[in-house]
Image (cartoon, rainbow, N blue to C red; front, side):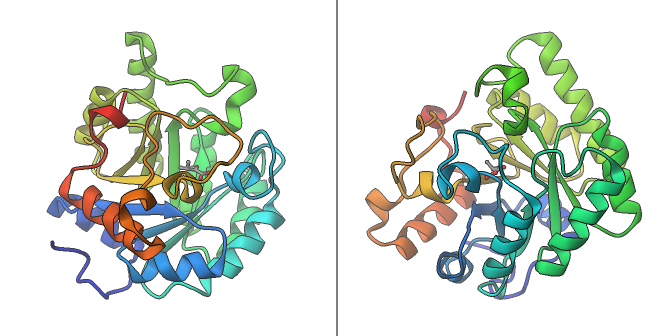
Length: 270
Ligand code: KIV
């Protein structure tokens, strides 16, 4: 199966090339050096230091307690394990509340080894995206179920189900791309909506619970390994370790399934 010239390190501009060429992007989260090495050696294109670490590593009920220092620490240890994958790090809760705060946080993350920062939402975040991009900081946007807004949402629910909400999401997706984001994570949205957004944008979309029509997929490492994190396991999660036989085998099985379009199937989509 064709990959990113197999051993060539990923760059931010190469993401748009992949979309243009119809090559699916394979992304997983990682939080430590040993897993980073396994992911990097077994076909993962992008590694995310997600603020999900608050839930799966630190034992919190949400991502809200995660700090910039936490993400900096995990970015540092993971970056030392990557030769090929592109490293994306989350801007945690309210570290992107203003453009200036986001710039300080993003500088810390890039100096720790991140190559792109991810932030949730549109609205006032469009100014933040523009501010960072104008300063040569690559940005991945994140729309749909944005876990940092869990208090506003009243729980972790599928977003964009009715036509008005779907139209808002389509507009937000266009707006984050126009503001300069070079990648877009779509979390927990109906497959048909994610496919429409993907077709509408020149930048790649990465789905999590967003169906097979995205340009790539991401899962949280602990979910993908079938670990009990103490949290409800969403429908889109698949345990790849069960069939993969080893962690490396699971990563390869996931990468193959994403690239061939076999994952996610309808059983793992909304
Ligand atoms: O924090 C995280 O791991 C994420 C993914 C779920 C996309 O944002």
